[in-house]
Length: 340
Length: 148
Image 1 (cartoon, rainbow over the protein chains, first blue to last red):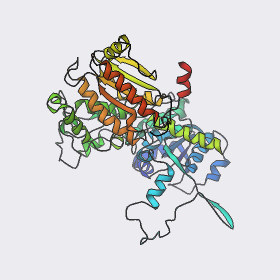
Image 2: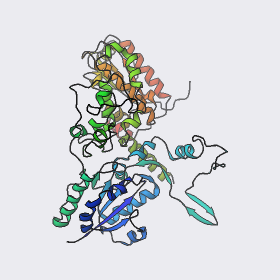
Image 3: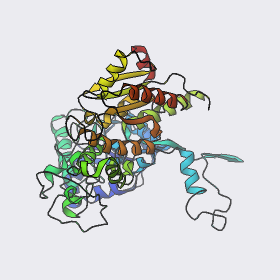
Image 4: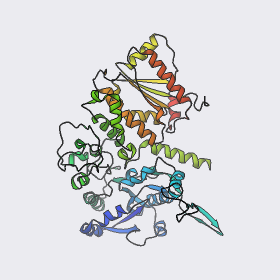
């Protein structure tokens, strides 16, 4: 059988996605039979020069994980898009922005300030007495450069064209079974699924989660996961914990809700048909908060109840970059580049 | 008073069918004057206003959004305006976190007889927006202006 060329490229990654590939264990054997690895820096010492030397579209499939955080990540994304036939956004970060996108409300300057100057217990007594910080350019004799920290942290789609999405933080082996099917189908018949296919479940997580769900869910007091020991049989929302399950795509098999007795945080991205999971979930949570005692609580009481939800951006948009932010950030970046 | 940062702000007002839109009608019939910067959209209930509408309006070029409904306890659908109230608390907090001033989003209870309150709310809101810089989310403003 003809082998196909696979590359695993990375943006601002944590290593979890690489581990998820290694974690496939014996599943790697049939995969190894059909692929030839062209690039994967975690597995072996590949160089970017080798990739640059390849012809355009020579790589068959490229898995890109991690969001675009620095100028280097954008360069890597463009390089691999040029060299590969199929570009797959692998993991929540490259699909939607992931955890790093929580930095999006701040620009690069604010992030550097809070890390190197204003951060908790940073003062003259520490190792960084002169409040030094990384610069993208430095010249003392010979000019040296470092990748520039961008003002945004956006998903892969903001830079390049993406063929398929494999969400998950990190993706799970069942998704790899689907992915292997796609790859073998591609080798045998040359067929590929339609562009934009999401390699995961086709329902919301609640369908997969076997917890007992009541007829009607009402939350009279919001609780954070550490505040109570949740009943492992009952729906987490009915116990007052904000679980992103209703707005999140299935496919993980309820790893958090069933396996760890923890609420879903939404790493599989929006459920099919949902454009903006954050606002939809916000709307749903607001509807069920104190739903039976609204008149009793009155406007002030309801306001107080809603204010007990800390950090709406981090709760409802933990993995998903809102479209509004993507648009604004790109516009600001365009304006700045046109100034230069 | 501080300088005018945005002399002609654009405002989208979501008015509920049973109270606030009637107040707007009454204001019109009574020949009351209020700034022409408001574009009104009538919804069946203020509870129908999905948070997506608010952010779409802001991303589409509006400098401010007003949601107006019946007074608490007087909703035609019994609890619709309570749901709006709860949503707006979270929406305002979320907007502030996303770098949009939460003053741009305003919730007001206006019953169908309160034409004066309607005029006052609109005038005051627009006056406030004039002293804020143009909306940071404004991307398609050119497109919106071309349409009107």
